[in-house]
Image 1 (cartoon, rainbow over the protein chains, first blue to last red):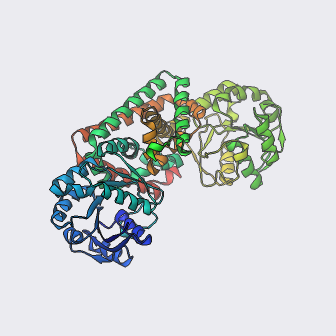
Image 2: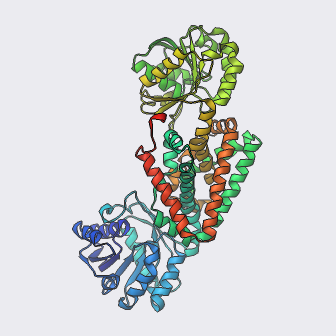
Length: 295
Length: 295
């Protein structure tokens, strides 16, 4: 598979790395970029992430065979709307959003009758840095990409997109948008919320300086995701709030159980829980939870 | 300062690394080790962590100038009791326990009238591996060691111990046992509990394999401390349960606030909290919370 003309709308870490990877593997011809920051687009052009700059999303989409929308999700609806009249009938539109039900809703609203051309995707990759300057062609190597195809999608489009991501080293799997949002609420959105909550809790104390003064490696790793982008995580939390609230309530229930163990000094129950958690995590690190269904 | 004869009771990662570091800096003469595992003591002797093996804690303490008790904390009371009749009047006894009020209580019960000789200490260092085989002389370099001196202690003993830890590269500070347990409940014990809780929560689900299948780098770092030693953390949690319960309740309150923000889709409040947490963490990473008092 080869896409002669690719449009990347939002040439940041994800969009720029996608473009670089396609170029490296010779899976695309010309890449045109669009975005709100002229300085970032200039960097993208200078670094060879893109071959040209379009005036806006509509101009970028015009004549493209593949369009990746990789801006913050809140801009999606407007972008989908603006490109809808400029799509070639054979073009595939995809995205890189971290939530999927809201993205699908935005695409239905923006693309209207052309919704069949949109194949939603979520590449599970991020890094400490962002923007075109941080893009690198190896970002998706070995990382998961989840496609959440729509019933309207053409099978060959979904297969082509899956092959493209595989072609740049990603591990592609498929699920429904609802299933996606449920899974990521548990293993990604909740941990982010918990890490933010702990740092916020501690930094508001009168003795915050003392507390941070004794925080060590365990605290650093536990809270690493509390250094994530606040606007992006605000949007993810709001978009996936029902599933996230469900996860949060399950977690609060678990904390109540642990509270009870502490209140009664139930050492065997604490040890059992800790040992089970450690065993589950070690099994995960060794790939022991994997099975064919999710590979 | 120089200790001609050092006894290390419990020659694991901490005790063994302490001994190696003293030897490297020529701060000690003969090191005698004692412990429950003959195989571990043999490794310690072969690796040069210790120079001889004593039959038990009492024999090790006999004639020693410095005695480090670095076994699991639950063994402390018995060890203190067994060494109490074998202490030279000038000997300093110290420890490496992660909690301090319970250790002080065990020392008072075990050492009786000789409590003045015990200077409690907590080196903030750990690693993925344990035992004599994992010991290394650089373990404490740049790490904090908290001394929690008792009113009975001789000033010169506390100063000598502080100088010794500084001599092997540690950053030494002092606080009361109660203050120590309060600080570490917040920045260490609570995060461990939260990480264990999340892994336990997820691993008990019917779709645990699917969830772990999509857990990525953020989850891995957040839960790293859930791979910690279950028995050790059971003991820490039980020993410090009152402070830990206090921290857990503050955290539950914070989660309730966040729940409320999600329920009302209060995007600005979520963003504000995330941004404040990120800023506090970045400030911490850059050393911005440090001041003279805690250095």
